[in-house]
Length: 148
Image (cartoon, rainbow, N blue to C red; front, side):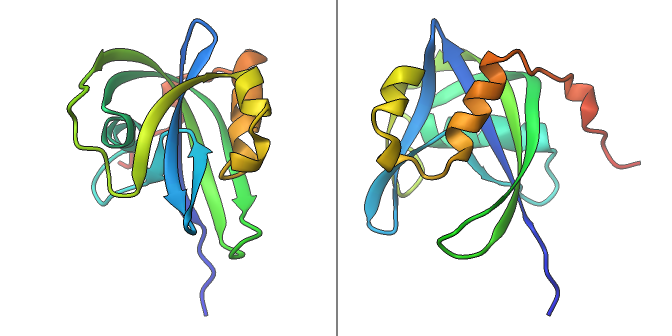
């Protein structure tokens, strides 16, 4: 059997100390996550981050940087995920956008508000990405090179 990590993207969108989060159903309960998802065939990581943010929140965003690349093994299923976490700025909200199946709503929360609902996090990567962003971690989008 071949072991392969799952390639995922996530996006930090911050507005005056509030972060765009997704409330979604996972395992029959509501959990919080950054807008995030899997890479689709024939798209770049940056395109995936912008697409997933729109599909899960109804927000058009522009990717401006990369917070980091994270390797995470989910204790619930043992699957290893490689997450590329982007920084983006909000451009336009589409309030009537049909969100992806399983998405309950988009929410804007401060770090303190997130800390108060720790049991509702989908994973610890949520706060790690936010803290890295708040610490000034911002790498150029040029970090990720397209194939030749």
